[in-house]
Image 1 (cartoon, helix red, strand yellow):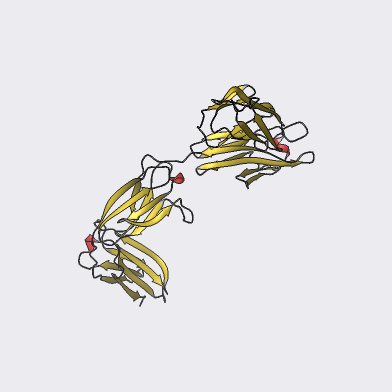
Image 2: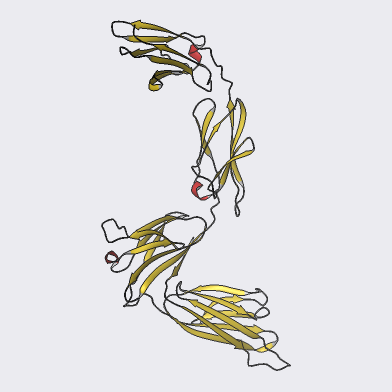
Length: 382
C-alpha cells in the first residue's frame, strides 16, 4: 500500500515545444513536444512527452534526475510526479544518433500552498492498521473550532460537528484499488478547501484458506470461512462440484458462512478463491450423512391428582438411540419443551403441571430430519 500526498486549489496546464538548434539536412534533430499538466488540487504533475519514441531522454526536476528512458523503450511517455508547495523547474534532456547536439527544454512553475495564512490549513495523518484498513487523524490547528467532513472516493462518509461527539479521526476498510481520502471545510476567505491523500491498496491473495464445520442436526450443517483476510477476497462455496454461494462479490450478501441441508450419503464441500491477479486456491472437506432411523413414536400418560401433574413416558422401541423432544401447546400457542439426547442416561419421563379447565396438547417428536415422526394428544384435568 502506498500513500500519495495531495492538496487542492488550482490547475495549470503548461506546454513546451523543444526544438534542437541543429536542423540541417545532413544532421537533422527531432522535434519534441512536452505537455505538463500541473494539478495542484492533488499536488501532482502529469507529464506527456511525444516525439521521443526514437531517442533516449532524461527527466529532471530542479536539476535532479528523476528517471531515464532508453530509445524506443516507450511508445507513449506518460507519468505522474508528486509535489509539495513550492517552485519547480521541469526539464527534458534528450539524445539522438541522428543529432550531434543535446535536445533540451525546460518549464518553470509554482505550486501554491493551499494552507496559506488566509485559508484553513487542513491536514491529516494516516496509520496503516493492516493491508486494507486505515485510521486517519485530523492534524491541523483549530480543528475543534470548525465543522469539516471526511470523504472517501468523493462520497462524504463522516462529518465532524461542533459537539462532544466529534472524534477527529476516520477508520476505513478499503477494497483493492486506488482510493482518495479527503477532509473538506469552508470559510469566508477561501470558500471550500480540502486536503487529500491517495491510497493504493494492492490486491490481496491469501496463501491458504479453510473453514470450520458445525452440525445443526444430522442433516443440516453450518460452514464458517476461517482464514486471514477473508473480508478482502472474493470466493465461492461448492457442494459436490456445484457452485452454491458467492462471498464478497457484487450483488451477493456476505456473511462468510454456508448453511446447507444434505441428503444421506457422502458429500464434498469446498471453499474456492478464484480472482484476477491471484492463483486459484481451495480447501475441501468430505462429509458423511448417515441414514436416520425414524421411529414409530408412542408414550403413556399418568396423572397425579394430588398436585395436578401429568407424567408422560416415552415407550417406543429404540427410544435410547434417538434424540426426541417433548413440546406443550395451548390452543396452538407454544408453552415449553424438553429434549432428551440420544444415548443420554436421563429417564424417558416428562412432567407438566396442569391448570383447571385448560386443554393441553402434548407432542413427542423425533429430532434429526424425521419430520413425520411425531405423535400429539390432548389432555386436561378430569
